[in-house]
Amino acid sequence: MKKSKKNIFLDTWVMFKRCLTISLRNPETLLTATLIPFCLILLFGTVFGSISDVGDYDYIDFIVPGIILQSIAQASQYSAMNVTADMTKGIIDRFRCMSVSKSAVLIGHTGAGVIRGIISSAIIVATAPILGFRPHAGLADWLLFIALLVLINITFTLIAVLCGTISKTVEGATGLLFPLFILPFMSSGFAPVDTLPSGIGWFAAIQPMTPMIDSLRALTFDLPLGNRLWLTLAWCMALGIVSFAVSMRTYNRK
Image 1 (tube, helix red, strand yellow):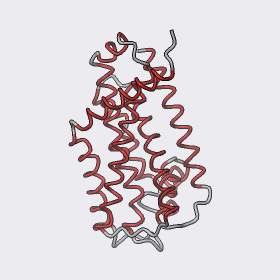
Image 2 (tube, rainbow, N blue to C red):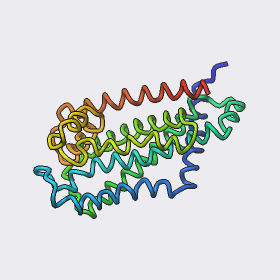
Image 3 (tube, one colour):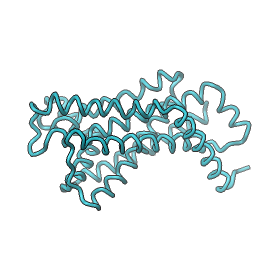
């Protein structure tokens, strides 16, 4: 018998609270997800800031959007680890016996992961001014900036959930997410695309991290968005939908 929408919503809420409780019991995960990107700001801002040419930007202003994406990627790995742990330790079998909605489990993990990512990126935005970050965004820019961050958080977390469902070990789930952490280095996150070597520059121009970073950078400095926002929305929708669909199919098969 099909579950009612009310029951599905209740199952999702319970799973979300469960996943969030697990996160609160492991505060070192959020600390790590924030500390590593902050150290990257400190490293790149102090060591490379004086030798990098990024046009009219101060280097610290230029790199903060890329660091934010790395903080989200770092936080999302714990979603992958938690999903894999559930898939391999038998708790999913108990959920099936309890007739818990199939989608509720994965949506619960996604919701908790989004909260972790938002907290991590918010800490980066709040602490970056200590190192010299000086945005010039207006209220409308900040509202759009926040909305875009939430969308990117959802996308990255859905990718993490996918990695968690297909991995056989917790360590393997973390390894599958490594590209999310390294891709900002091969984008416009730390240097203008036109200054990169030809092969890397071509890849940076077509990969999804570049329009995401460019959009966040434009919003923090009240610059024209052009088609970067639409590219970001297209990438997020495509990656999110595919990740969730494949996650559900894998979850049902297992």
